[in-house]
Length: 335
Length: 217
Image (cartoon, rainbow over the protein chains, first blue to last red):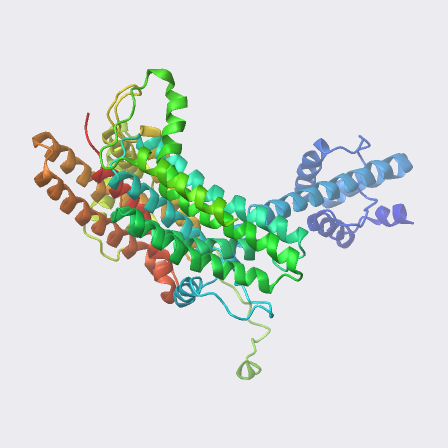
């Protein structure tokens, strides 16, 4: 019956055929286009579309007569060629749509957009709140899942570290120093967040990864203040006061928030003990051992040809060794 | 919408008009002519565009020329010259020379990319390359400061020279930050300008710190 319909070849039906083809990959198989029986393949797609365009310009009646004769003669073979071509066309379109959708999904920075939706007032409020430990630990405390504040705090910490290196007149190559500073700060933020998130998963604490990143990031505010002050005023006792005071406050806040979200004494102890230890030790590490770490790296990189580094501002090796020893002894005594 | 209910077009009057926007008929000819023109004209046109943007940076007014026709030639030239001037000594020298070329290059471009992503995430309407263009061009005052510092260091490296260098670098840092803020802050929602300005401040602070603490061999 369809072949019979093609036989009439009126302008209206031919126009209908054109509409179907222009729709592109429509599900309607038009029996009038049966002159080519080459197998369905993607390479034929372009050829088919080109032929479609040419056929639009041809005389309708002439082409219609030729088409319907071929269609009548070839029968099932022609049908398969046409069907195959339609399927290939559809698969091409679907594949293209899926690829562009996947690309726009993963390469889209709009995924991160909700985490940057903050106002300056909110950021300021959260910075101040990060130094105030909460009292109510029986009720899960709210943590804002934003990433702007923590990211800016990490970059600020990098800048302060670099500034500190210079004011202490440590003669190290700043190039390697910059990379190490960025690596240390980002490594701490991302690495310790992931580790604590993993522990929280083990201890059944109610916290998501973004919230953990946010919490730890804001906890670095205390570190920034401490380092900014103590890099400019070089007193060890002052550093200890700031370490315990400012560092302790921000650690207490983080610990309190985590405690409020965890059930069970053992779990609370494990989680909060780990976080407190890591946070406080990181501040200690940044103040004292950072110089030594970078110099150690450079020594191993440069080999034995390097002359020993000259320290100008203060006698760090002797003092810091003594300090580290006494600190370690004090901690050992308390435990 | 209720007022549109009685709008009707008489059926016997055909609706007609031009949908296409008339494109200047000389544009295909222009394409051919830029191919045929002497190389000097092409280079001079690009150089003039770059020079005009330098002038815009030195006198930051709220013009859109910097944003509309962005190009990265200026930032590249500035970044390379700054990195060359900041380059430290060779690897086996005792004294602290300074950052290597690659470090400065990477810091400038990586910092600019981070600031651009940040401003886009905060809801900015500016495009990626436009923002890179503005941030790169606003390194110009700091490059000038680097030149001045090098000249001052040729004269001597005492406390006086340090104070001069400090003043010059701080002034240029302020100029850079203000210039880039003038261009970038407009593309943000009004209540979030501070959030965009802070990373720009930090970025130019790090570059100024590198310039100020540079000591020649």
